[in-house]
Amino acid sequence: MIQLLKYGNTNTYYIKGRNGSILVDTDWAGTLQAFYKKIKELNITQIDYLLITHYHPDHMGIAQDIIKNMNTKLLVIDVQKDYIHSSDKIFVKDNKVHFNPINTEPLIISCEESRKFLNELGIDGEIIYTPGHSDDSISLILDEGIVLVGDLYDLNSASEFNDEKINNSWKNILSHNISKICYGHHEQILDKK
Image 1 (cartoon, rainbow, N blue to C red):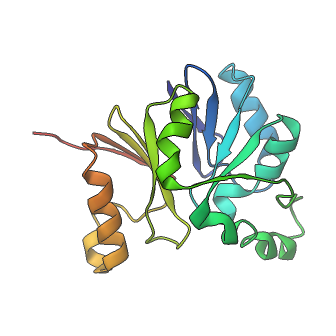
Image 2 (cartoon, rainbow, N blue to C red):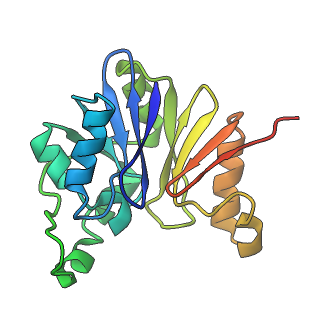
């Protein structure tokens, strides 16, 4: 089961598997109370893991608060480990919002290990490396045909960038029989005619 949590500017997604749950992305620092209101509204009481599609401020701003307050573990794909603190300096400059940098030891796995890991949570899918928007971008593909891509450039406009990384990421994603794309800021249903 996948649920959209819209409580700020970024779409975040809660996936409840048969044996555990995962939250994909957070929002800006300063949205924690809106997050709590949204999970209460959706009756979400446990988040086992937090996966961030890329470490830009609008996708990881309340990560440490969720990790600490909800006893959630941070799941990091090995290609992301050097980027975990890449947005800290942005928040330090902004004294209008309170920001807690990530200070927990993450669980680091590879994309190749992701299917087994997700399967243990009762989630059928895998995580793949999809650089283009950023060098630490990953996407979560569910076997039911849904992909969560964070901020990977929109499929319809990706060709305008004429960027090999972006094009290769989309080729990889679309090779998985995708019918719905969930972006960090909108969604797209693919016409499979």
